[in-house]
Image (tube, rainbow, N blue to C red; front, side, top):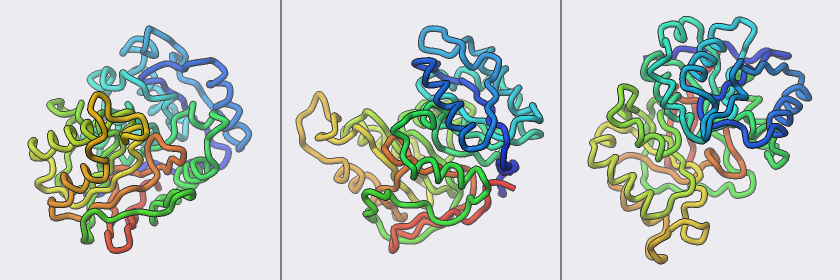
Length: 317
């Protein structure tokens, strides 16, 4: 099945900002994001409730859902970017009109907690979406040039080709051999687990599973992969691509309350190498320093012999 495609970001286009999850931390974060986009020749349009705050949420679920629908139907908006992740995206999903969204496709981008929206949009509309930087990321003075250039390249329509490697550490390891093609499905590992049992539960049948994680541990990642295996999620998967597992290794803050016993690589190898599909680790997407924007919902080819993931289906018109 071919993905539903939106139109690429034109020069001087408008970035619509929504807050489906948590609110901004400081107002300066918002101003920095606006300044960054404007400095690159684009316009920014904040959704009506984008700056609302209610505890750890960016306003009521009804407000956040209304804003997302408004951005999809607003003809002046070219790309929809989430202000940040955090928590709360799943609350808005039951209030979205996916038929209307499918009739007004737009490039949609965000990561982390926004995983829930990526899975719902793919499940109910087949829309190709983009697992990439949030609005506060582009305003962060520590955002790498790699992250910025990859995002602009992809949103501008250059969506096919190999996913780039980390410029600081280009080594990628094959955990299992083989070559396979399938639709890219995934996001943040823990947030994917939270979709299970919902109407928008992610589907890995005939898919290349791409995932990343943050703030877990080797035993936490092991538990998540065990659950996916026991739930039958890997029975028809075509391949697995692992991104950054930030703050998940023993010497990277992960592992409590158990002492250093097994490393992340040992966990990944044991859980994934026996699936009979190619598996590679790691490419730079997720919560790391370099965040490559990844198109979701489109076809790609994973080749463990060259440790490459090549997007073969355009994700934008």
